[in-house]
Structures are given as structure tokens and as C-alpha cells.
Length: 103
Image (cartoon, rainbow, N blue to C red; front, side, top):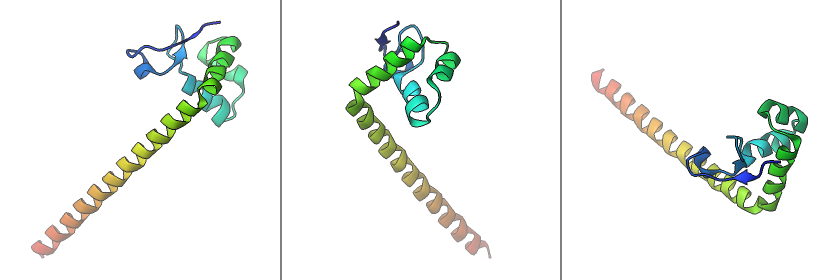
């Protein structure tokens, strides 16, 4: 069974199955969040079941940190969407004003 590794140069330092680019979060999202069969996920990622369950064990041991990271990422995503909407509205407003000036 491979251990969980971190390297800032690989997948932005996310905890991953050692010797692969498969992160704990990748496995968690598919097995826990999406309810996929662990055997299928392990097969597609070409890792052992021991590695897959080791990654899930790591997730549960550090669940609070993972959930905190996910909440922060979701908040960042929402803020980006809000800024994008504001920019689009601003551009539409300028376009409408430019059209009125021409007429």
C-alpha cells in the first residue's frame, strides 16, 4: 500500500496517493460525493483497493480541514461569479448607452 504524499510541485500540494497524481480529494469526490463503486474508481485510477481506502482513511482523519478548504473554495467561486456578473452588467449598461447615443 502506498502512503499519502504531498509535494508543492504536484497537484498544488494536495495530499495524493504516493507515486501518482491521484489526490485524496479526487477519490473522495467520486466515492463519497458521487457514490461511485470503489472497485471501479480504483480500476480507472489504476491504484490498489488498499491505496483507495488508505486515501479515504486519510480524508476521514483530516475531514475538518478538507471541509474547510472546500467551503473556502466555494466562497471564492461565488465571489468570482458575483464579480463576473457585475462586470457583465456594467458592460451591458455601457453597450445600451452607446446604442442610445448613436440613435
